[in-house]
Amino acid sequence: MMKGMSSMGRDKKEDMKQSGREFALDTFLTVGSEISAEVAKKSIASAAGDLAVDAASSFIPGVSGAVQSYKRARFERNMIRVAEELNLKMKSLQSNLDSKTSEQKEQIDRLFQYVIDSAIDEQQEEKIKYMVNGFVQITKHDFLSEDFVLTYYDVLKELRIIDISVLRLMNSTRFWYQEGARETFHDVMERHGISYEQYEAVRRNLLRIGLLTTRTDLNVVDDLKEISKTFKDIITYLEKLSNPKSNRLPKLKEPKFKSKEQFEISRFGKDFIDFFFEMNQNEEEEPLL
Image 1 (cartoon, one colour):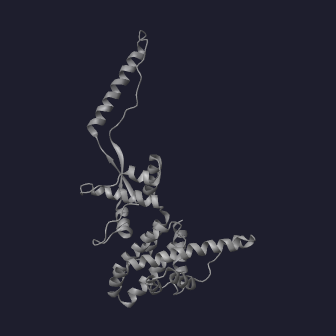
Image 2 (tube, one colour):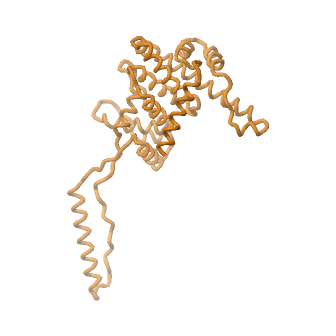
Image 3 (cartoon, one colour):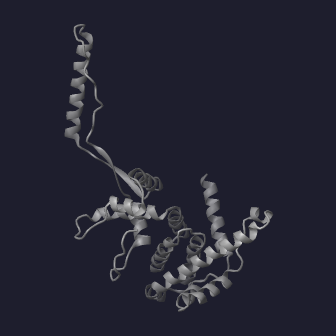
């Protein structure tokens, strides 16, 4: 299994290397500075060329053109959003790139192609700003492992907006001591129109991915009292059960322990948030999604 995943990673890297220089960072920085979105659309579309259509659709009359049109529309929309988000980060990007050597800039350009690869097929356009945030983080480093970058962007690709909202909420609970109103899970549930069961399902998914972990809040004294009470109830039950004069047996209740399993942000989750959602100190804090 691991061998197969490693092979897929190498294939993905090779695909990006073969994609040509059309997606070079300079192209997007230039496009992003244009005033007109139409100029950006034409520039990016011409750089990309025709999109590949699923092989199956080519055998169905009328489907091929529709699929290609749909994919091109999403592609252009997402690439324009990438250019716009890059333009918003232009000052930080330029400052970071000015201190880099030619070799470092070449690696950053390769890593930028991974960002583009993630953005091309993204169905939730809102996530693209986080992809660009991650790229700004990339430009801050002199070197980053390509496997590291691929892993982070693969995880982000797997998340939906609701997942990101819950993850950021879980992270914000670490700062309960700070002044100012903080969102609660009720706010997140109401905004996204989900039930508590769905909210818990999202947290379980984040736990599965590794962005959350669990800890047990121990309440030993109360739990021991509950165990003692349960044993007494069992003894009373057995005594009455063995007594032929006893007409009514007491009901045995399942013990209720006070210790509970609690979700909390994992170390990987903290690093993940710092990578994609970290804000500059001079930027206004954006609300949780």
